[in-house]
Length: 194
Image (cartoon, rainbow, N blue to C red):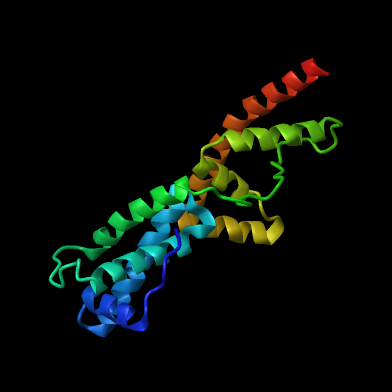
């Protein structure tokens, strides 16, 4: 999906298209970039959100260079970028995501003193793989860190998704509730097979 980046001239043209006043253009650029990052992060693109936002700017810049966008475009230009962002997100979902997730994630509900922990972890991996991409990203990101780093990471995640920390916890709780029966079913199948 990655295409060529904008030249300095293309970037200046893009800023001028956003607003003829350089200060206002810079503010609109930042506002649009934050909106795009939020759009991608909320859509399950996770740590690629910033890269995909830059891709949206690159595509609009190339359209401007080719003269395919009217200089006198009326309306909120953020929506123009979001139109490109939808296509970019669709392409992102179609791309194979290699090494996108860490190999093993431990959800705290797993009893580490239990001798069946290894089996539960294998089932956890299997069940996480069955989740939709957005939920997979969310549950894995949520449990990446421990201690103070975990709190800071959760705050960044909530901000990235445009929600408060309580809503983030609720989403994680719902995903865990969805995972638990899958893990239990997997463990019972493995017990029957052995």
